[in-house]
Image (cartoon, rainbow, N blue to C red):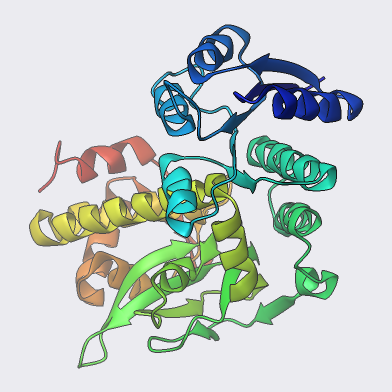
Length: 354
């Protein structure tokens, strides 16, 4: 049974809310002021807190501020209850970390809907989904059931791209988020002479296109299938609803985006200071993690590999030949097979770099 703490200085309102919630099957705790509410929150650790804003001694803003500083209570969902309806007051509460805002007077249904929605969001944030498109579709269905805005037809929109087909091109507006169900995709940029620099390699389970959507800008790079691929197409509007409706979901994509920024900075550093030998080793290690099979077998053209390394194809071919002579790689049937991953990692880290 979910435990809910009600912090409200008006006895009638506090008792009325408790009665409604108990009839709905919740276990209720009550506090008549902010100080007692904080003590009870820390000792009882409820599943959700409903708190009035205008209270003597310590108002609702103060309660939220103190609870957010405590590790045990910072993640408890928090709903403000108030007669104040000014936009600035609502914005202040949400900026401080409140999860919802209910204004007085309210009816039973409005109160229960707000609580149930918050619990569904919390469950959604902690729910684990299977890998692949089915997991993504289940995720979107859960959002749809909670917010009632996605039509079922949007959840089955797959598109097949043949090898060397464009997914999108630099300058295109981002109408969709792409999820790779099967295949391999590269993103790259070109200079005025048409030379490519590969900025990313993506495979099953990866997302494409969310950076441009979040920035509300056109794509800054090109995206192309490296082999026959199948992508799940998620409309931009659906993705934005997911981000704006749930801070936990937004946090996950921000973490992915931050990781990509770190990777890009590391790539620039290596392009500036690492040798071709080191950069080739790093590219092979990256490909091994992203697209290799269980036998460390890679299928990539020498041209694409050189575009990842950021140097001429001839230079990469010479390094690959050296690696084969040293027993680090083997060429078989058009594939490269990594034979000594540890030594490649040593080369990348300068230990035995030439």
